[in-house]
Image (cartoon, rainbow, N blue to C red; front, side, top):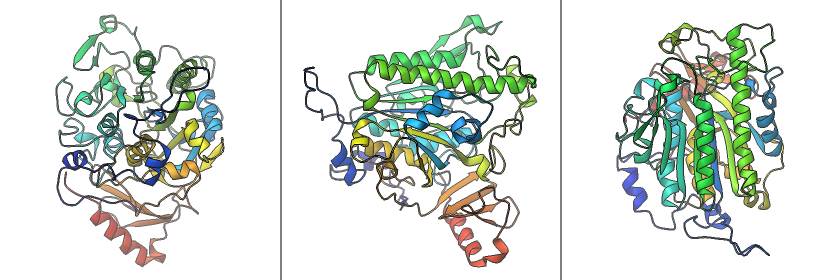
Length: 472
């Protein structure tokens, strides 16, 4: 069951004072000792020791609908790398983000849902995180990991020295966009490396250097540098977020589709190939069996067009064209399933597979959310977990154990629309409208509102919605 710290005491100070016995759970101690102190015996014939705590590679895609991958039912867009990763690992069928970009990133980093997290909407992104916030970067760095974030941070002002800067939130290395609006530009004239700007003057008057390619190369360099130490790499591609810009619309150039749809499909196929380059580097360095790999999206699919004129593009994209949300209702910026249920693919390291991990190609049906990532990574690393999290580790779901259930999962959008899930029931309350009630096991598309038939459950929804929000 999830717990929430209601005392107002800084979680950062509590984390620093935790005793060694307060771990992510019993499995954390039994699976791997702390990365800072533990190494396995030397491999026969090599004379080299191997760490027991796994590397962790988290790849977050931007506005990728769960229906846009072949492994989730896509029939047209080609995603061979991620489909292969799903065949090697596990595909979650009920994984959740938040309705929009910045809240997902804040929840991912802090282990708190949007009712408790500081960043509750994209409108909160310009302030971002504060010094007292505890992030997964800090938790893993304290456990001996080298930590890096590459790509879209999307939290805080566009400066190199704010409290929300990745280097001040537990990441040893940062390269990419700090501010989320800046991340809408696929041909940036500058990016940030730690606290300094890296200039790309060739993009001043032409589209030359593509951000997605830069992120992949930076990720390869980070892995090369960190190969001999346990590392955590959070790689946040901006693809396939609007404005649907890409160097080439291949392999869809000859398709009789609107240009925006050719570009959108090409974005997905291109980033699939870029992820393949990163995974291949793990293989080349012999790190495949030492690395926990996760690929997810930050919310449901987008529908975008002229609202991105500030970066020079008006190419529209309609999520219905590729059935981007599959059977789910609605899209990004909504609290219906199509806005918040996302793809999540996980490949286990050898240490987890040897301990009874689930079979390759498995489906995991346990509901999980991005605020579960922090406790999951802490358990994988044998690290201490901060108190007061809404998230719970989903390591048991990957190792064949009994996955703890959340008391509830909570979402909100711009402080107006709310949703809560408990068991298979989900309540939705849109602004100034009565509660809607859906049974997700029978109605994943949220078509049949059962509120009138279950007044007691509606009252429970109202209680949970009222109690889930805390001022940050």
